Length: 288
Ligand code: PAF
Image (tube, rainbow, N blue to C red):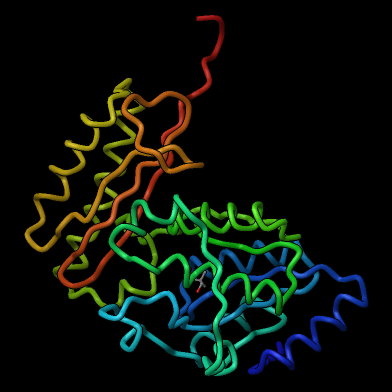
C-alpha cells in the first residue's frame, strides 16, 4: 500500500497504471473510516485492478456554522483499515493542494441539490460535486464507489457524471448498520450514550415505513406521520425532514407505485444524522 500526499504525485502514478491498462476503483472518503467504507474497498478490490482510497475532509462542502473543524480525524487508524482491506493506494492531499489560493472553479448540479439535505445545507452539494470532479480527474477511476446512506449525494453524483459525460461508472453500495440498525457514519462518534440509543429511532421509523408499505399502505402522508411518531418519542431528536421521493428527481410522491426512497434527516442532540430505505413493490407471483 502506497500513500500519496500530493495531486501531482498521484497523477503521475495514475498515468503509469493507465499505461499498463489496469482498471482503477476509487473510494472517495473524508476519513475516520468505518465498516461502511471498508465494504466499499472490498467491492472495489473485487471489481478493479487497483483501488485508490482518498481521504480528504473537504472544506468546500461544510457550511460556515458546520462541523468542519471538529470533524473526526484519525489518519493512522484509517491507514490501518485500508491496509487490512488491501487497498493499493491512499491519497491524502492537503487542502492547499486541492484548493490553491487562486482557486475559482466549481461544479454544480441544479434542481435535485436544492431538495432534502440541500435545503438545510446550502452549498453542500456544490462542494461535494466540485471535489468529486477533482478526484475523478486526478484518480481517473473506471468505477467510483459511494454508500447508499448518502442517497441524495449518490443520485447527485450519478447525475453529474451523466450530464458531464464523465467516463466513470458510479456504484452505490448498501448501507452498513450497527447491531441496533443505526447507519454507520463517521459522525456517530459525536453522540452521547443516551443520544446513541435515541439515534436508532431513525432506522426504527424507516423499518416501520417499509412494513406499512409492504402491508399495502401506499399513501406517503400516512406513512410519514407514523414515522414522525416514532422519532418524536425521543426527547433529544428533532426531525429536519422526512420525505418519500422518486429516486431520480427526488420529487415528493403522494401515492407510491413502483419504487420510492423514504429519506430522513434528524438532529439527535447536536448531531445531524441521515438515513433512508428503498420502498419497492414486490413482484407479483402468479397471475393474481
Ligand atoms: O461522502 C463523503 O464522505 C464525501 O461527501 C465525499 C464523497 C468523500 C466528498 O468529499
